[in-house]
Amino acid sequence: MKGKRKPSAFVNDIPLKYKFLFIYLLCVLVPILSINALFYVQISRNVDTRERENLEISVDRVVYDFMQIVNECVAISNTVAADRAFNEIMDYTYPDNEAYYEAYNDILRDKMRQYSNLHSYIYWMGVYTTNPSIQNGSSYFVLSDSDKESEWYRKITGGADKVLLTSYQDTNPLNPPQQEVFVSLIRKLDNSTGQSYHKYLRIDLRLNNVQELFQKERDYLQFKLLDEQNRVVLESDHSYYSLDTNALLNVDTDDSQSSKQIVRTLGSAGYTNGWRLIGTPEGRVVNHEMSHALRISLIFAVLTIIIPTLLMIVILQSYNLRVRLLYKHMKLVKYEQFENIDMYEGKDEIGGLIRSFNLMTGKIRNLINDVYKLEIQKKDLELERVRAELNYLESQVDPHFLFNTLNAILVICKKYKYEEVTDVIRNLAHILRRLLSWKDDLITVEEEISFIEMYLQIEKFRFQSRFTYDIDIDPAVLKCRIPKMSVQVLVENSCKHGLQSVKGARRIHVSASMNDTDLIIVVTDNGKGIDTEKLNWIESHLKSEQDSGSNIGLRNVYKRLMMYYDSRAGFTIKSTEYEQTAVTIQIPIDLAVDPKVEESHV
Image (cartoon, rainbow, N blue to C red; front, side, top):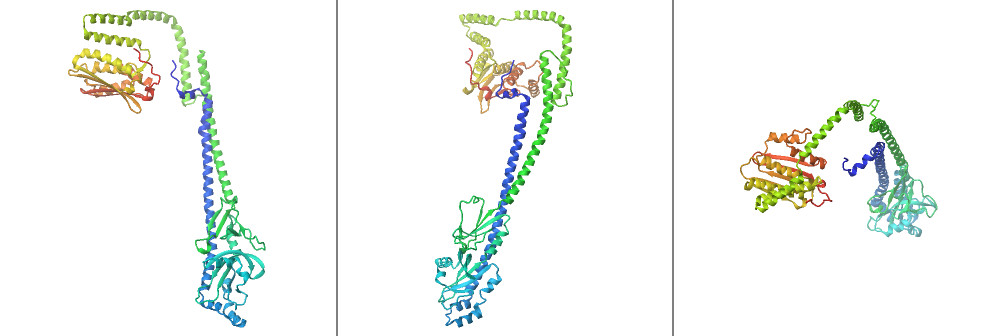
């Protein structure tokens, strides 16, 4: 008889070689490839993060170095602005050129030049003033109309800041015909009191020195220096020393590299507001690191795939060859060819099967020879056994005859008004009718409880007032399916062994309920109980395969529960001598609830 096919049994229909292939693909190849892909992605992210951090450090270093230059220029401008004697000379109105040149030779000649000589990053340093008695030349100039139209002048006079870092395109003061891009620090010299003229200190930075800062990081980054108007002042690979009026370029906001660019402001001082340094990664170092990571990942992937693959091939060939050979010889058994498998079978489980198969086929061949010799004797013995069995069957009471006889007795009891006997016979007749009508092995809790009530009424007649019983059934479990007469056997066992020797009141309690996971049925009696030693013996023999001849009813119930519910059912006995014995059945609710419960048999 074939067992019920489970939904997961389709795996058993798949050929063994395809199972091994699925195991290899799903448990070896796909996980290895996935792990290596994740490994490469993680390495790539780590490389990208590390290189990004290094590039940010490089950009911050360039910003720091550039701001060192700017801050030193600010310090120089503060020194000049605080020089009271110098500012008085610049504010003095000279009566003639001779008086000015005398002051120039004594004080002004080397005043500005000393700073440019000491600091290589200063391209030119000079003062513009509204004092008309100053003679243009060297580092001192009277503001002309063209100067007042210049971009730097408009910026310093148009704001409230005393110090301003700005960029613009203007005439080279050292070579007037030449136009250049300047990055200059402009300072208002208005610290002295009572001054009659406006003075502006202009310090032009040497852009070559700034480019040298860029060149230090040329292997990693390309730089752009942007002014407060978002114009490109200087680039790593280009200087704006030209006559081109478009030398100051606006930044292209649609640059494809914008997502990779590192942008830093030049500090929090007011004179650097709007100034930014943009570093664009060269990509060579990152690409080299990514290529290296890819090579490592590929090598690791190849090694982790080849070695397990070779190992799987060797193992699968070992299993597949022997299993196919075993399957071939087992098919021969179907056609009564009992041949041994002639090979080294190995010491694993497959080898054990092959050895067992060879041993089985050898015994079958020997048995066939023995059976053939005894075949005639067996026929005679079988004939005698059939005769004995027929005689035994003829001696059995026909259940239908017994049922009809009980009905006849019931009619007589009603006629002479033997009411109590009538109830007992009626219940006994119902019990027999139920036994005859039950065809299924599994019935509902409702049917089982109905059967138990009829049995307990018979016991009630037997024990009279010394016997009571309670049945407590949760309506939710009435349609759950259980093996027929599984609870009745427990009730009968309580009456027969538990209550038989009790002199006082006898009581049996039957309950059925459910929790989130199980259907729970408990049969409790107040009989003589079971001592610990005997209880341990009963529990051990319930699970034993050997039939001890005792506790057949309990053993039958336990075996059926394990068989019907895939060994997931629970069966426990708890007893206290001369107080109480409780037998509990636990059935997983998913196995007990049957959506196709048939109507109860009557």
